[in-house]
Length: 432
Image (cartoon, rainbow, N blue to C red; front, side, top):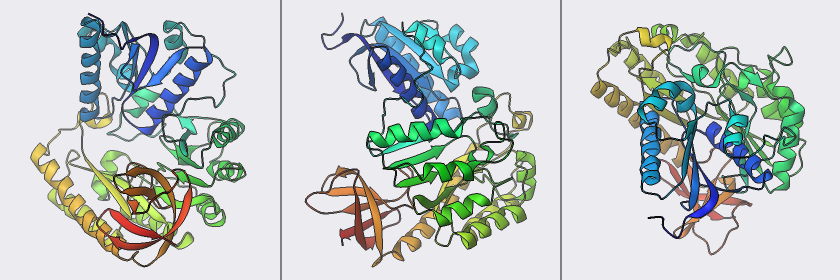
């Protein structure tokens, strides 16, 4: 029996996975709102549900499937009327999903937004460049500058789900940024599968630096942050722009995945330990004080104890400001799927724990060095007795936070603070 709280013809968008999926959901919601639809994000009172899935690695796929099954159960109980599925999992496994979970009303791939809108009785409006309903706090937003990826990494299924690289023109991104700034956005987080590839398809050159020079002109935007830069072919002119432009955060997210040369070669990363170290040293020389975030994969097929010891020593020596570590996931139709997944799961987990233990110690030491120093902080929210903010060296959800115990601060505003104490992943501060 239907509960009274369910709202007829209200569309509930459920987002799983990465920031790129968040962006896609916001675009979908913007289109639906422009069609006069009642749309919400992850609220529980809509009778129509659209699940934007992730299909990247095993854990993400499992979460997506469980979410689909949950809403199918709700449909059978009469709590929702229709369930639609889109996103990466649907793009990658559509025939299998249609066979295994047939009670979903319809499945859509990552490039089928017009078809999805039609199923929701809405028209795709091409003129809505940059129009979206934000799901992040009002003061920061993701800006997806390109779709897809042309890189040949052996372990990655993204090209299967997102297709080849396609850049969005600079003028469209500037228009979108102006609209975001008008809504109160102060921090732009640039995202793509690979920011460094930006422009090669439409401008026949790497044009990330050119894009940044235009984005810094947008009034109201105070911070611009760069996520996901590929190490091979890194455009050095980007570092000059970061150093010269005050609005661009001294922060780079560069997923390096590994450092042992045999593993890098098998991963088809197009780089070596020597080349990687040269890029990292260049970053630190050209932009003193830059925070570098990276992610690593352990347990890749054929990763020996020697390879792992090389990785551990390198993490110890390189002292990254921020670091995440994943265990290798054996993904169908990737190049690495032809290799034997020969590192036992318990060994993968232990290796990941070992890397994060090293990083925890490094983070604790680096945070301790910040005590007594002053920083500009952007406030995200209030949590318990503390207002929680971030420095320019921290991205939302994944990095360190600054906790300030005062009566009132406004979320979305900047404040100058002095760090009074530190833990491994948090700073405590007072207003200056």
